[in-house]
Length: 142
Image (cartoon, rainbow, N blue to C red; front, side):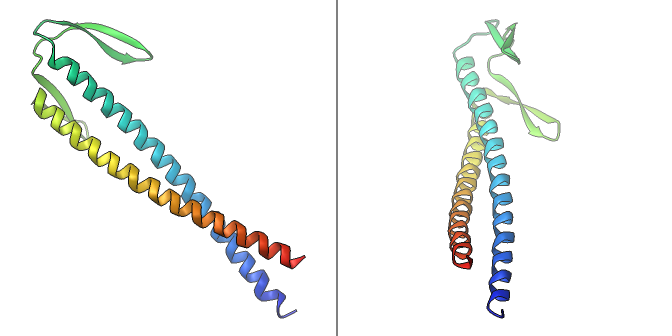
């Protein structure tokens, strides 16, 4: 009976650790998803700036407004871009400066993505190891 109590305690601890790891993995998946969305958004913005670079003043363009819908606009100044800095603050930049800002943000997001993916892989590995250990403990308890 004294052997059973430590085994049950270890089983309980392992079970709690598995729940924690699964919650961590879920949070990391959500983070990865959000970073992916931000990367796609910045990539699209960068592509739009690349297209603008080739346009002349008063060129007609289609600007996406969401829901696969667009508004036709005339480009007043192809070298001026309003860039959001965060917290509702935006600043006017030259097209080339705006591209640099977006590239820096994209690089930061890609680093964050790599970090989150590495963390997720480590957590997934620990989950697999824990499950194997849990299964062997349960099998030996029978």
